Image (cartoon, rainbow, N blue to C red; front, top):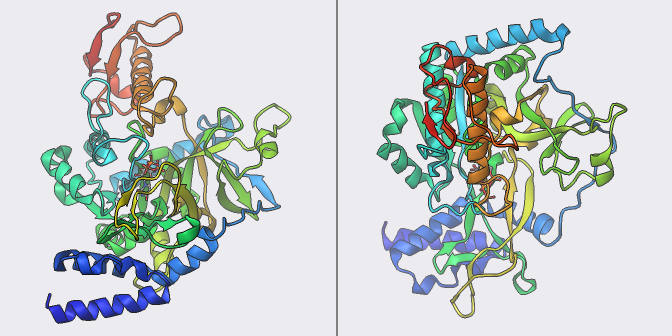
Length: 489
Ligand code: UTP
């Protein structure tokens, strides 16, 4: 790029930054080389400054007040085990789900753009070794599930993976290094989500965008809600339409035993002509940290656990069951034409579409403007602005909820291992082993158990071998597993 165009670029950046009262972004301009200057100007271009100015007023200068809607009701759901009168419907739904997968109408979608700060793994979270024996990475677990589904249906199941500009290159390299885990690279599409700047909370600099280095904004991914826009702007939706995809099976990168595609859920969602649907788990306790599925004026809405008043969270029905029982585990089905409608309503480029932003107070390292020195804060010093995918639910005409089984489908890896910590690699592996043990016992295999019922062996069932316990029928299984043995199937 010529010096002239760099100057023009700089002049344009100065104008937008001045209008947004963020001119400090260029404080170290004189110290940057041309390459660094270009990177900084490109970053400036990537931010919607008028929107950021509005968000600074509404989400940084003050905390947005949350007002609990008056007419809040618990949302109904389809139970995991159907009552007698629903058995016919479930059989029909299961058939419908398989038909859609077989007909090539369903895509897998993994959101993997998060920073995984709690886990603290040096690399994209999807590359984390998740399984107890092979240490298969999370991406490998999903790939095996997809391969299994492709094998049994004969269909091509395209897999879309959302990264962020921070982990996109590493994710792509990881897939190349692992030869796409046996999948056709032509059916795996990796694309980055959008970013938002972190904004200072310090009274002296309130509302000012932080710099990560003299020539870079402190940008972070704009939340999993950014997926609904990134699916569109990346061309993923156009690609899906070309392939005849109708439904997107949305899952997170952190759960190695998630059913990447689940025929019964797909069928129920499709038969009800829902636009975006969700799986739920019955909460274990009133204040379990899961979002609550609610209806507000008939519209499906997730109320975050921190926003549901304790009195409501503790309310029980006459049979003792929690009134607000349905917890969200971020598994969704989304119609392709719903994502298309959301984005095209906002103009063809999709530029105007965004879900509501949420404020998160975080520790964000930054460059002090006066000294030019890096600062690592020891308490939250900044606001990150994120959107959440479940905020699209109230925009649906129709949305259903299907209950799933916690032991069969939920073994999340969120935190680093530490004594007493939940949702960490250790607890996830214990849950994976427990599921494998139950599946083997259902096929008559003897599994050694300790007095507390826990499994006294390490067992891993590859999802190439089985994604349902019935898949183990006819496989060469041991009749019993030795105490403290290791079994890989
Ligand atoms: P989490 O809320 O658990 O966040 O994301 P995280 O970034 O993985 O981890 P922490 O909070 O920094 O420890 C739930 C899912 O949403 C994805 C994550 O990759 C994960 O699959 N996600 C989150 C995105 O794709 N983009 C985002 O901006 C945020």
